[in-house]
Image (tube, rainbow, N blue to C red; front, side, top):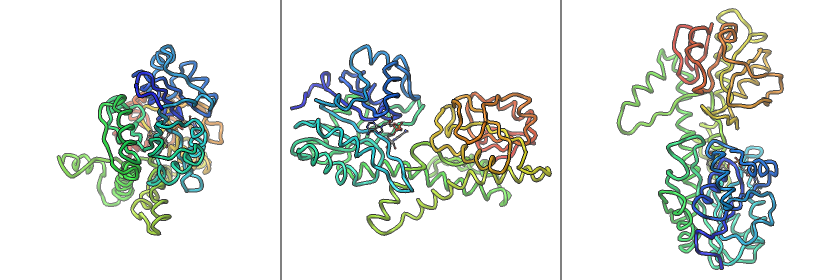
Length: 426
Ligand SMILES: NC(=O)c1ccc[n+]([C@@H]2O[C@H](COP(=O)([O-])OP(=O)(O)OC[C@H]3O[C@@H](n4cnc5c(N)ncnc54)[C@H](O)[C@@H]3O)[C@@H](O)[C@H]2O)c1
């Protein structure tokens, strides 16, 4: 039987990325003996050297976890042996527009031979309703020879991590937990109660899975609404940003979302498609609003390029050969996270038209994945003043925005942070 004492529990976390690493370190901090398993041996090597891979864990925290003996990063699946609790936090991307659960399945196959009666398995990866019970459970059962519920506990607990957010961390953000039966729910609740301040029980695993994709779909749809309004508001003779500021003074029934150059990161460009794909597959119907929202948000980089093109055109300049200074490659301010960042699409569209691109992003390391020899430029008076157009794509605090206001011949502000006569807002 598994060890019931949290202090001596052997906890394995499969996937040491944005989600799995902070979870592993937190579990080690509260006394679990944690195996941080990742198939990327290079990543494991860097973790063994206490490199903070991501914004939510510091080098000091990793060092403390390593020296306490409570945290062992590994790429060896044999180290999964003898676990009491296993958390699966591996990627769930799209492949050809459809959910790709291969990492979840691989993780399940590696875990199952090491399962013992009484062990606990929790899926944290974002996915569509039904994954835990219809896909993961049969896999674990067939490989381990154990029965879910009768022999082992199984459930789903969605991750709500907001990389870089100092207020709402893994510990302070309420954590949804679910289990395939009451004993599973009780075991999973007990595990997370030791890690986070508030645990929220959801009776059905499918509902917990839906809650995760619902949260991100809600954001996707609302961002699409303001993005679409932004593309029309100038022709209406209105300013979307002023309207948003005004509407946001309503103390109830309104939530402020802001337009931008497109959505990025691991969640919004992917999670809503998991849901709409599953609805089409399982019901034959369509989540029309979600599909249209995806289309609108995906079209925003082209809209940004269109606005830049129009601005150059008004000055008699073609895109071909024009110098365009892009401020920000990361999808999110003050991070170096470039996953699905719309800035790359904007840069590629401009490069394809022959523009001379300069990129400033102090958080993103070279080489840039741009099929060109674009290098880091600095935000200097000369670079701003000599650019035919500047586009503020990501509003990092490190950017001297006053310098842009003073020296830009023309700037397209996608974040509503600039003002002045040479500035246009998205
Ligand atoms: N990043 C976020 O803000 C966020 C928020 C909520 C939910 N999620 C979800 O959490 C899951 C993990 O996301 P992430 O951001 O941590 O991804 P990530 O890419 O940062 O990390 C995933 C890690 O898993 C490793 N991996 C891949 N296959 C593996 C396997 N079979 N066994 C062990 N390790 C394996 C990869 O090498 C990688 O290091 C995804 O489903 C994601 O949608 C992410």
